[in-house]
Image (cartoon, rainbow, N blue to C red; front, side, top):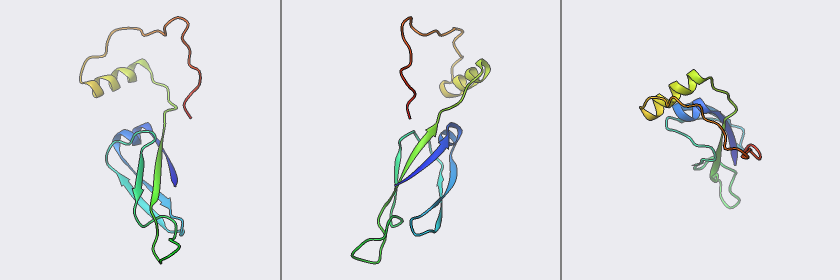
Length: 106
């Protein structure tokens, strides 16, 4: 299994990554579609060597999307309007009293 860290921009817009296979060969993977955190892809015949023949097994690729970012109100408005095709609500959101985040997802 290979874990690939990507940015939010890459997860939404597509990207290309080079990964090193278990046999030492570099493989270029392109992803034109949206990738969500935790998505798993399988690359046939690029995993570990198989014991009973000369082939290779499956390589599992797990994606982790880095969500460590801060957005200005202006950027939030632009993203909202792009994703929803509606005007950003003129509202200041606040947390419910007594509610707090326990931890960030790893």
